[in-house]
Image 1: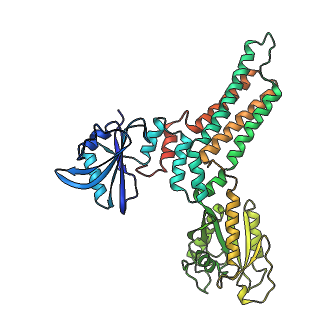
Image 2 (image 1 turned 30 degrees about the vertical axis):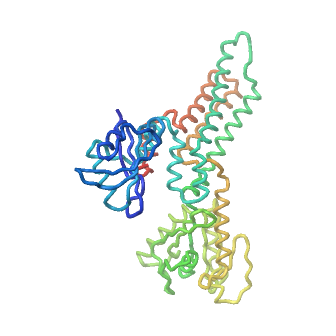
Image 3 (image 1 turned 120 degrees about the vertical axis):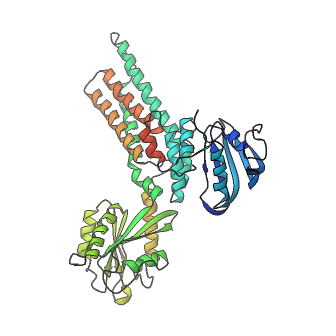
Length: 448
């Protein structure tokens, strides 16, 4: 018998309502021991009003929602207790439940039960985590579509086609003396190539999915006193970073979030980049800049135009060359201090961070870049595990094509096809190991 678990399913702290979830074969019996009504005869999918009592003392008036197996989130008997919010009430109710035989739930244990009981596959489990932790509106919407099982159906259809093809290849072996051909080799190549393209296309969307999942990272870089902290504050519309005319004020990096186009933009103000500093703290701050730039999706290089329009050209070229796989923009800042001809283009913007001139245009550009980086995503949020398995499946399918080109026996070709089908099955959890589950459920909070 699996253990019956209980946990707070809503965020802890002061609030109007808390929900406590209990799942397991003994859920009804355990709650019935401390509930004023009779739950043992209660029907499924009902809400019952009553009191939670301990040692003849009323803890709270509550609603009890009943879900009998298998018609529940976990596939087990589930009860959800709606009680008043706050620091004390829910903890007192949990204490009574534990005294009556329930066990404290581990992170993600409810959803793990749902997976083990066949209510969700692994891609749906991961969609639950993405939905909870989503940092963007498109990310949440995509996770919700993935939770509905569309990704699972697409993988199942492809997997069945591959298994059917492998079966026909093996069947030809039984009729090798009659020289019968059950698989048209031209059609076979097209089918396998389509499957390879499908796997590669999905795997390549991983970086875009990460933007919807975690946010679009934008780094402000430049020489000391170029106005990075001022722009940081202006983009945030509040005073977050210390601004000073003294170069090198920012020693560590600061990170804050803004929402643009429904996508979370993680804006980072970095230390000024210069090589002649003798200040150990500033030097360490400069080293941290590199780690920030490495993970950034967009880099904004600020130039102090009062020094010269070309003052930061060498830094801009160096960063553009080093991070050639992402967009790097040059911001000519402090245009309020000089009289110059201003002409924005795709890579250069003239702004005054102090007076908020040109910043709205820059803000729109950042939002557009964030949206473009994630516009490939439709109904699937590919994660690292998916991408690795899809890449392996594509490699197995390519091995099958290579084997066909050198007239290898059907049996060998079929092995590669079936291997690819098995890998696709691993994505949804047809086969799994405890380490995989532990990694996936480590992202979950207690109570989900």
